[in-house]
Length: 60
Image (cartoon, rainbow, N blue to C red):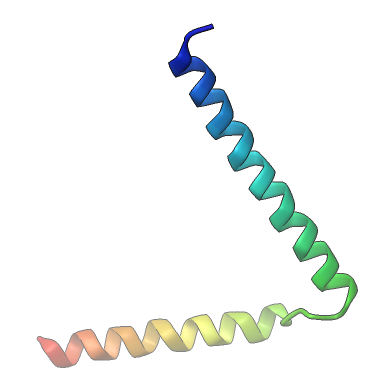
């Protein structure tokens, strides 16, 4: 195995480990009730998009 190949494997494993840690944190948050309802999250996202569009329109 070449050094480059070994490094790519290490980077891949590190990335996958971080993903798994994030998933575990998300599951723990959900079990503890630390979540935002989908409707609330989407309303916040829509409001940010609208604010961004309004700002962009003012700049034109």
